[in-house]
View 1 (cartoon, rainbow, N blue to C red):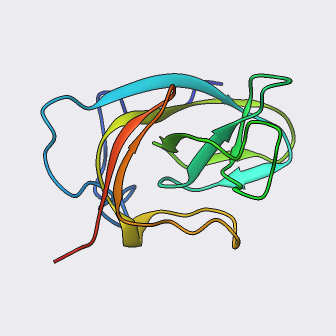
View 2 (cartoon, rainbow, N blue to C red):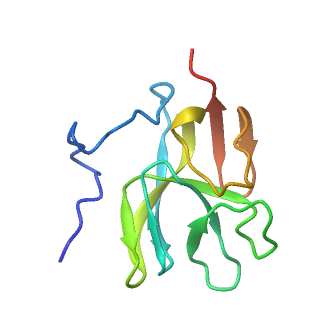
Length: 125
């Protein structure tokens, strides 16, 4: 069974909040695998585990690779029963208030630039 990843259609009822702070000219996305045991919503900040190359909710307290911000989840993804294919934004300007991470991972406004991403996290006006 296929999944509408939103590449060509984003229905208004799918977008419950606007994660984009501006119309960035160079939004880039990347196909990813969400590791099993997670049910994540669009706008979740992701980290990539070094050991398996899969994506998990970003966790700054970790030391397994997921402590590094590696993307913003582009579509609600239920991987409760097994790994799921999804996509993540790796460039763009995002509204801080529309993003999710682990409770201990503080999302702060500013520019994030590392080997994985080039993101602007903005405060809403």
